[in-house]
Image 1: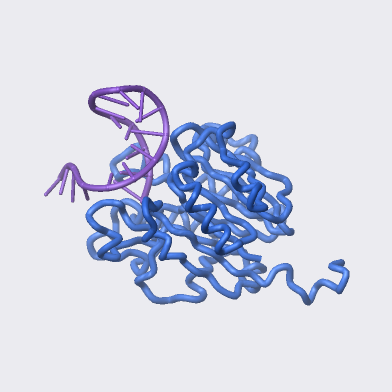
Image 2: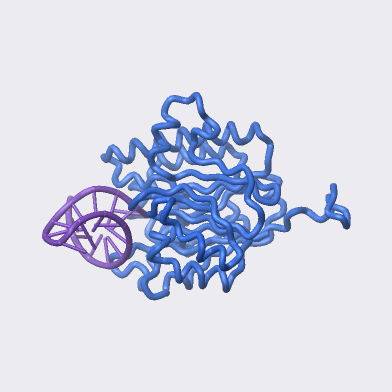
Amino acid sequence: MRIATWNVNSIRTRLDQVSSWLKAEDPDVLCLQETKVADELFPHAAFEALGYRAAISGQKAYNGVAILSRLPIDDVRVGFAALLRDEPGATELGEQKRVISASIDGVRVLNLYVPNGSALASEKYAYKLHWLACLRRYLEAQEREGDPLAMVGDFNIALESRDIHDPERLSGGIMASDPERQALRAALDGRLSDVFRVFEPESGHWSWWDYRTGAWDRDRGWRIDHIYLCEQLLACATGCVIHKAVRGNQQPSDHVPVVVHLAWPPESTQDDNGEW
DNA sequence: ATGACTAGCACGGCTAGA
């Protein structure tokens, strides 16, 4: 099973590129962020033609997440409120469409678009920290359900210096400040692991390059698009790849896809009939 | 210190991204 994540910065603008990538790479699941389209205008037909069904949570112009899958999609959940109904704040945070999950082949796939935060002095930064605190409670509720979890998306946080092209200049600023890093670590709670780092300890691997200042040409990027796995799925991971070349496309997204390869479902626990 | 680019909305110049 292969699960991918990609902030496409408008699914309608990027439709041809996403379709081409799906045809070439053939992942089982592709989680999208920043679809930037209302649900009634989502381009379902283009993906159905490629064998993918979509679970979506979008809005006009901003945010928006979707899960494309060629495997059956079950039990779709939108927003934090799906698991935190009684929590003050969970419903308000749902006004921005940033959270969707679904059960696919026995895996709970959670697709997130974490708020950027703009700048440390901005009220958007306070919103980001509030959102991450809510994510922590959401993941605690998810944990209680007991399903294997793959949490993917645009986290808008570089957790470590090796995830930034110029850590001396950028550490402490937006996407690299201690409070947001600690808030994400608290949500992970030692139970979810950044699978890319299982296979690649070195710096110099980025998933986002700013459109400005020639960041792509100079390879000045950040690794802010992540795939986090529970212990059970981590044991099944055979690789995690950043599809860097996509950033060189004509009219690209500023992010590129990240893909995890999983030996799932584990064959040792299934017999020839696929029964347990 | 700021802005650079890109997209959406709507057709001029904002907001928002990161």
